[in-house]
Length: 365
Image (cartoon, rainbow, N blue to C red):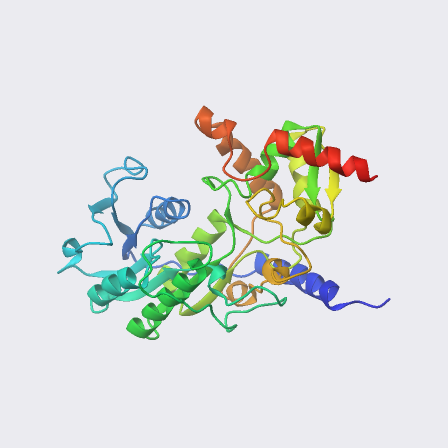
């Protein structure tokens, strides 16, 4: 039997996943003082809980606008805007700073310069969008980065997001030298995923009935459970891990078919899947506005977006919980959301649009 390059990558990815599951846990650490710039979005709360459970002292710096009552009195919160003065940080020392709210290089430069002599280690949360493109399979942390065309940009767009993140990375690396780590997650999923890009699929499957599925069941998908990300960053804090790390499940470890089938098992729904080809989705402009989240076309300029290498992070201890656990916990979290958020997801097909596309598909059969 002949194995093509893509199949070899998928097999290697599955092997890497098993290696990640058996990697030794990090050693216990003495209590540390940790500053988190942000801390109340999707990933921050999970990291705060990880660090507090390990006995570390956590300070948050944010505007106090998002989930302001999320934490109790044992987590200090400093109110400040990264676009303005950061006087509340002056004259204070922390062991580690975690920057998960840095989007503009000028703002990251301000915090980095202020903290460079007051923290031992700086962790910057970037994105795989920082790469110049996501065309080839197996992109690792040394692949070329996006260029920022307008360094004075004050708004984030689809065109400049990757360049902004890459520019912020450069600021951190130039300021802290070896005393830093750059974390590049793929889609961050699980409880708290208010982007709904992953959430859409388990929720739609749970609703049951005939549903549109993109591509083929064997198409790979990549993401990182927010709790797996928090555990890895916890290790970065305690061990002061250095360097750049892609955070996503290994290439081929999860396919679109497995995601949908697992969602059906967990929700015990009667959903049935009608698979729509890449050409059909392109023809009906379903790939242009978030209607088909997580999945990426296996052919074209985004072909490598679901085959990014996370081997370096796995070697440092990144692990991945079972897919069904992520789905189950995502559905449980979704059920606790406000009614308006449950009724209208931020990503995925509307019921009307899905019905329209299914009708078009059947007409081709």
